[in-house]
Amino acid sequence: MRDEQGSGTVLAVDLDGTLIRTDMLYEGFWAAFAASWRAPFQALAALTNGKAALKERLAALAEIDVTRLPYDQQVLDRLHLARAEGAQVVLITAADQRHAQAVADHLGLFDAVHASDGQTNLSGAAKLDQLRTTYGGAKVIYVGDSRQDLPVWQGTAGAITVGAPARLRAQVDALCPGAEHLSPAPGAARQARAALRAMRPHQWMKNALVFVPMLAAHDHAGLTFMQAALAFVAFSLVASAVYLLNDLLDLSADRAHPRKCTRPLASGALPIRRGMAMVPGLLLPGLALAVLLGPLFLLVMGGYFALTLAYSLRLKRKVLVDICVLASLYALRIVAGAVATGIVLSVWLLAFSLFLFLALAAVKRQAELVDMAGRGADKTEGRGYRATDLPVITQIATASGFVSVLVLMLYLTDPGMREQGYSPLLIGTACLLLIYWLSRMILLAHRGEMDDDPMVFSLRDPVSLVSLMLFTGLFLGATQP
Image 1 (cartoon, one colour):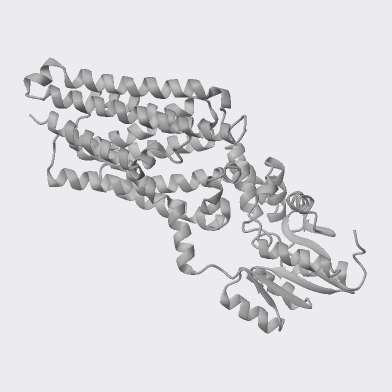
Image 2 (cartoon, rainbow, N blue to C red):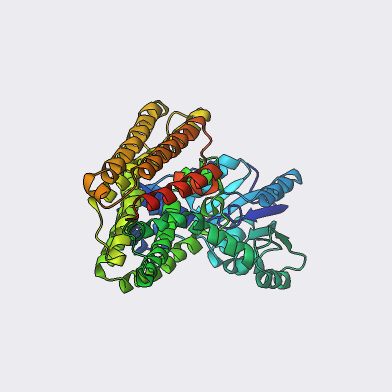
């Protein structure tokens, strides 16, 4: 390590929003929350002793894999250049010392690390005092990203901004003529696209299941359709809030995944604090719409949200329990459609749905295990499965899928149904088509050719689209009295 007190040039770089496209305070909170549901309460208790104490407590509650954080490549290149030119490179951040040191150890670029220590929150004026005390005889160039860094730039010899908006860049130029500006802030359109991607609108098609009770009952009334449509919108808003919560809790696991690492929150394209604000911004309107459909529908929506939260916090780590929960969440959409429209839900339909969705949930896990085996991994990140579990999960998918077809066949070939004029030929053809579709989905997952949720994949797969449309047409034709 070089002499900190000597003259020369010192490049002092911030961590949050500068070296990394995220914030270690929020990273620490969600890592701790993912590890234990008690973490928010422990964080509140620590906050009574100040922000530095909060950061120290969160750092102690859960580790963060700093090797997979979204680092800003332009900043890293600038640090390497400074070292090549003989400057001291130091990390000075309001993040906790434990996190800052872990980042420094990983990168191997820094001559010194200065961070919050549980007593002092090293930001703003406190950061400038630290720089003056330690490097008073040197030319200090500070690298930061926010308005909180303005006091530091005002007291240093040079400035570099990272991801700063135009107004902040102008303020820094006025304080430090000749300032450098790296990684310009993304435009409003780009930020909006990142927010929309985080909401996963492609997953909203799952919520079309709320229309199933209406179709099965052959109720085509305008009021019924409007009720189902309102249920669809409410479910989509609440589901998007759930997806954001799940991504916040899964930051580390997503960054370890070859595809999920590109998700807006995991990649840093969407700031964590903005993702956190979006959760109530989606959840509350969704629940408000649910109120319009009556207390029972609101209860179903509340149950859906509670179950998904339990799934994200704990149940997804429980082998086989996670598959059952996923199947239940699919079935809850059908229950919600029945409650919203006032249609009595058939026990046969509910049984068929549960077995079908259990098969699809198992296919989802099957695809993940195939992908994991292909990467040479033995265990899933954030899950309880092993590569050797693949044959069992495949058997569950196959058995559940075929049982769902059997339930449908028994229901539609019941003597009472035939007396109403339903067509056995169309019923049998529909069931055969469903067997083909399920078998093909399992085969594609086995080959590693399924890269998404099975239902979402089906909407992009031409063969699945044709199969499902034909099945729907056959089913509606067969059950039309």
